[in-house]
Image (cartoon, rainbow, N blue to C red):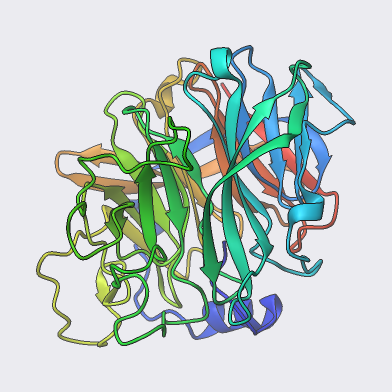
Length: 402
């Protein structure tokens, strides 16, 4: 999730806000702005970082601490849809990037009742901090309860550090499952000569694409870009630091991914087949390693960026394709963990950033953990008012017409 390892969050925040940025931010007067209203639909949650919608509109809410909660209409049910708490690595209450991080329902969920989760389990190797697990489950005869015994583990990835886990899961328009993985954590991707994100023999620092419609764990789509090459065939795109939330535009099919930066810049990319998105050579549009005169040939540059005067850890969102809020149509809505909300709007070949001011925002320090899109393409905001995952100040809001 967030770009830190051993420093406490408070010390880290003071560092990046005080001395971690060098480029001036654009003048606010030059940036477009929107005022949007949000309406609370659920609260009392443990760090809600992910959500998905059943065909009937029931919302499944993934709490970082391991439970998938059910929001049926206006009622947040006490009994969990699925409880993975006993499968998770032990989480820190103060701050942690591990936990239950992703949920995705199979495109044929109405008939096969299959869904997929990404969670952080205890390591199976002594040199690892933990392992990332992607598993399939099946809903029981009770539509509001999963069969906890139905787990089919598809993929495990050893994680050398506790942070930069990625964790998002999405089915693409092609029916394949896309999986986001961070670079293995620490700072600066100091894993080997070139770092994990540029190493094609590891799944870390990548977006993967797999076919789960098989009796084995999964198969590799034959049009994946690195099939038959000296690389992991699951890889769809690489050169990512920590892709914290990606999504498909329902109209265009484009894959938007927010990638959390190091100490200076946050970025949004449009992910293409076989693309190299630059980390650790670049941080957003700027050389990182080396700090100057880096080789950018062949790299896919982000559509836009912002520096750490505006925020410190990007949270990816969605292109709005709903009908309730006309002013949002076609805009990519996203935020920063520290609270700001933004949009990108395409003007010709350029994506222009604008600011979003919230009507109905609660008092206090609202952390932006994620976004969700329902079955009619309306958007939701997943939040917490605590730094760590174990409190109960998490809440979900719906964007509504002002």
